[in-house]
Picture 1 (cartoon, rainbow, N blue to C red):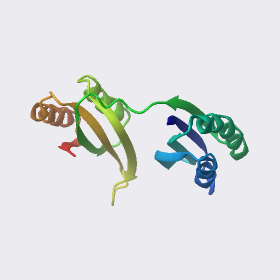
Picture 2: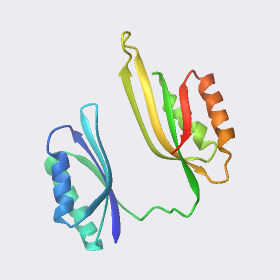
Picture 3: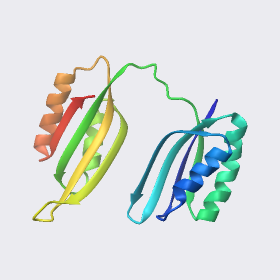
Picture 4: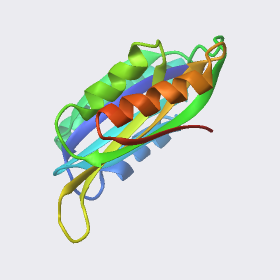
Length: 173
């Protein structure tokens, strides 16, 4: 079983997901993980596909032609299954705050400095009711090494958030 990850981005419009899914189906590839979203006026796709090595070869060739036709920028990358030999504990991080530059950088730095891997991260900004003030929301899944001390980490994260006027939580999944 071979694996590839593709990324594509282009002007948002109907039919992009269908075209990419049809390509995968026609090559007898399984879409086993994906993220798709509209960011600004662009539609972005991140997709992991598995199947026979010859089908992955064909995907690399055919994806370029399809993306040219659909006016999408794209990246193709062969990969392997994720190494799961390290024992980790999954935690969810949530943060809300008045929006300002640097929030993601500071939060990522907190976890990076502690050698904690960010497995998934999403952000959003919405106007607050009544005032319209932009409110930033972040949700992420992190992998805490099994030997770490969750209580100490949670306390450090709470202090970190308090110092920056962030409403944050760190909880087990």
